[in-house]
Image (cartoon, rainbow, N blue to C red; front, side, top):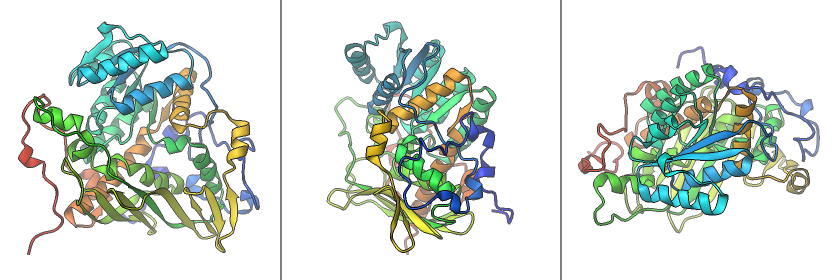
Length: 452
């Protein structure tokens, strides 16, 4: 980094994050502030332009929209149902997946449970299915393929003028990150609405806490801790007849080229919350990591990262996927006047007194929809129907590269800088995409440091 440190506010194009919905600090949003007014505190300047969504229960009615799904597995199947719940006037007109069985499963579910019959002519299988879905005439597309493919799919959708929902993470390597950031600028120029799967940005207690932190409720940020510690995730045993490529894609969450490792694929949520709520980005990462229990793939099952932020404060990041260990999925931010934690959705002063707690009962009385997986689609549709540009890809891209920094610091044992990683030529995409043999000798678990 140069001496002229760039805030995250400057790093992003603010025309992208502002959109048309400006700051929403209304009493309707603030259901549960207790023990004093945030206006008595000095606001955090770099957060004054942060985008705050209007979390209505359902999207405004408007023009009919045709939606496609690229990636018909669990997340793609869930996301399209979330979209149908979020808005009226949505018709699912195209589906695409690498494998026919996953496509047929979603197609059947949509017809039987949601009265959405996708014609056979608009069901596409193979590595090029994404192009066919986008070219079929959809207005909007859910991109929920294994993460390594998302930058390419986002780029094609944007070229064709299609609004994108990108499940997180949206990049697993520096090349993908740069593609995402460049495509986000193109999407802005085309007035497209792009939402990512960082659903905390549309979760009521998080949004309310963000506004309080922005307005100075905990003072200036001095550090934080973020966690995603849980048991082992799913995996697929190799079946007879599966090629190397088919097995890897069906078992994608365990292979670093497909998922980015779980620090990027899953823990990016928590890293993203800290970057979003503080307006900062990391400049250095020093980390440890290891593999003890994972059954398939070539990933680690634990990481611990020290991120140094651009203003010199530190964030501790920890993630683990090992059965039989304690669990913790949460974020904590410390400030000069107090702290916030997502485990209890509370703000405390320096003496440990709770000065704000999210009031779930008040929220239930005011709103009917509380699922952030639905509310993010409400926001997406509202921007599309209003014809207003909305860009979440730029911000999510930064969070993904932060995860990549932590991963590479753990793999290598070296302190990794933002400038090094953002310029790195690391590219996880294979030269050939076909259901056949892969150079499996290249997909090995990384060993930190050098042998004596």
